[in-house]
Length: 136
View 1 (tube, one colour):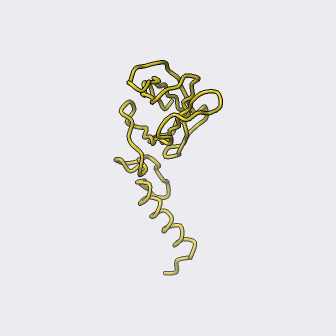
View 2: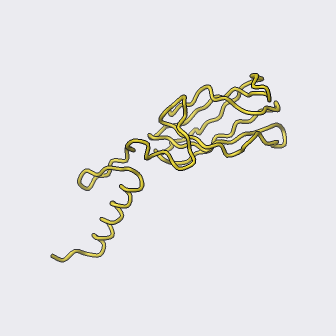
View 3: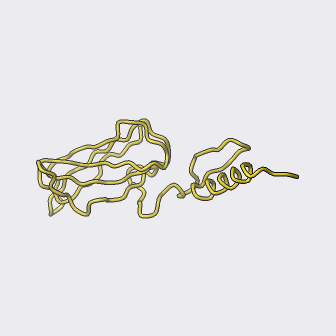
């Protein structure tokens, strides 16, 4: 039996893809649905509001951005999304709500792809509290 080098490379690639991403294969078609928690990247935490989205804080505290303050989060979704939308409450240093803002990705996002949400305000805030997080 003579197996071509390209067939071996294809088989190795599919095996590696399945092992790294938790994918399952059905013949020659790949199913990119993620199994268990394999879709959550190291350093990310599943959202309490939406268990199909995980996040990582990029800025340890809101940073001045020229006209106000901003705090960024990196997010990934377990499933493909047409868009991602999030609303947060802005909190002062005592945890009191002083306002709200929103952020989103207004473009299709593939499952497992990393996106950045930046919450900005002209108010000085100490932290944010997520109120809504949706994969639409």
